[in-house]
Image (cartoon, rainbow, N blue to C red):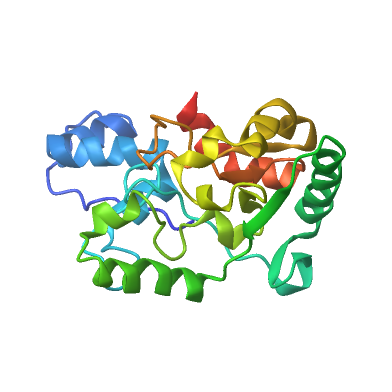
Length: 234
């Protein structure tokens, strides 16, 4: 990551040269010292926060921890890493294998756990965010409570999936999913397959409660990717 350049010294130093922090204290105003201290502690996030909004069409800045409107940034998984888990639906291969095993276990318990949405490329997320935002006359903040801006969706990683209950299609993608056999089964068994609920009620990210949205954390790569979200939730 690029370092934030230090301000030029503008004062004459005393005869006995102070240490580096003393020099900066003489040269920089209080506000600049605060920024410098944050830069030393959080060089990447602060650098991103100081620049204009990262998504065209959004008048919003990144927070100090790198989030945009509550959502953390996520990369798009390589196409070569994807496996199909349902018609037209793909996940990153480790997540896909775990999901298929989880579906078999659910079926053995009489639960029809269906995949409603899995990997979504950033280009599709852009449409889902901006087009629906326009159709519903929503502000960016209102839209971000239910849909991540492009480049900030867990779905782009290939590790996130939206589940439904095949026996309760009327509950798909609504809080009513929390009352279905599929959700209750996930609560009891998803962790053994390395899936966790991304946005529980009153989550620290400020995203609306989504009982259907789960993410895979069964590899070191996945854990590293979602560590910022985990840390915020603790």
